[in-house]
Image 1: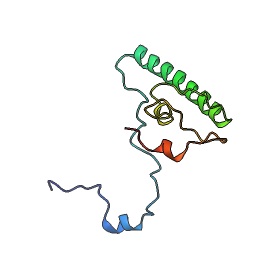
Image 2: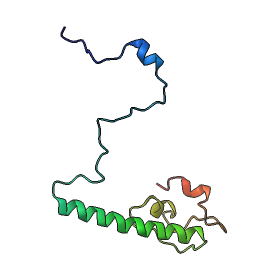
Image 3: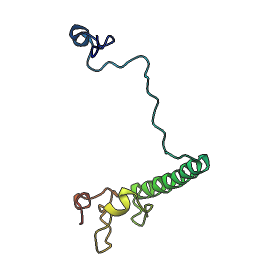
Length: 107
């Protein structure tokens, strides 16, 4: 019987399953954080990511406590979202929350 799958579930079996249920085991493993053929390159990428993440978290914490001079690392979404083309920071007055104008694209 070419073209027929023997392991396919019947329509009734599919309909009896809860739509949010998950399999007990997965055939797939999680994707690697970084794809690299060489382990030294992969380790360097992990180290660079840890440094970036630490800088981002530090700037985020500073901003949350009201420090308007907090600088986010280059390449982070916040580094461009907080500044317009004239270099002005778009942060709310007291709380340090982003204003509605910072959520739009500045072209």
